[in-house]
Amino acid sequence: MKAIISLVLRYIPRPYLQLIGHWVARFLSIFYIGNKVECPVCNSHYRQFLPYGRNTSSRDNALCPNCLSLERHRLMGLYLKRKTNFFSADLKVLHVAPEYCFIDRFEHMKNLDYITGDIESPLAKVKMDIHDIPFPDNTFDVAFCNHVMEHVDDYIRAMSELHRVLKPGGWALIQSPQDLRYEFTYEDATITDPREREIHFLQNDHLRLFGRNYGRELEKGGFTVKEDRFVMDQLTPAEVKRYSLPSQEIVYFCQK
Image (cartoon, rainbow, N blue to C red; front, side, top):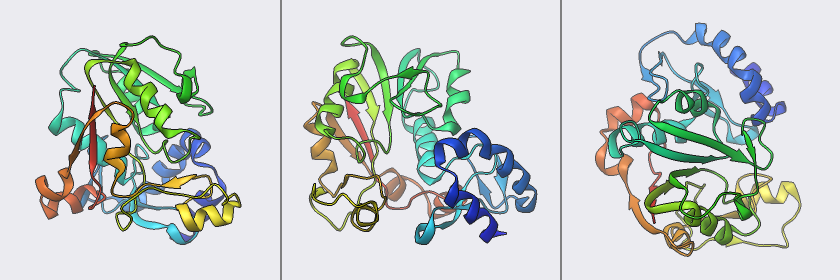
């Protein structure tokens, strides 16, 4: 079964998998009935989550069959519930490169004025370049932009644009892949071959790999950044296991 799932995930790009894959995932979920893991995004529970990843990066217990959340999405969902006013306050929200697992849920929340935007995602309603966000200064209370900064040409400009469109006191979650073995961000513009990029930057369309200085990089965009070790310091090992969370990921809470 895992081999079949891996083949599907290897040859269908994630944006299109998000459009059609939920039907496949829900069918496969009948083989995962149980209550050992729980998704804090959709509140479903299973014997375990589906495997996810491509080639050598395939991970067991990663993909929720119901909403298609991955480890990082479940972390964000849990963080929003436990550490923010996202589910109670009236908020205007910009979600860049929106994740499938959140869109319907956030669109149906009556306290949110929720806008999705991206330059190429078929899931976003506003076509936009994050280097030049088409909204006035001080428009949004909250912004989400996860796993984008490793793709863009000028990530400082992209961070600055997110800062610009937030209202004073507004906040953003801007997560990116990191390698905590590196102190500084690793970039090399001479690496253009997709196979080499995958070796150096974890994925063939990544332009860089952020290190332990990621919070300081976000500050260059104008933010005040809190590096919240939410998983490591505030959750029990049993919770980390039940929700299948990335155990070493730091949440970067960025405020204007």
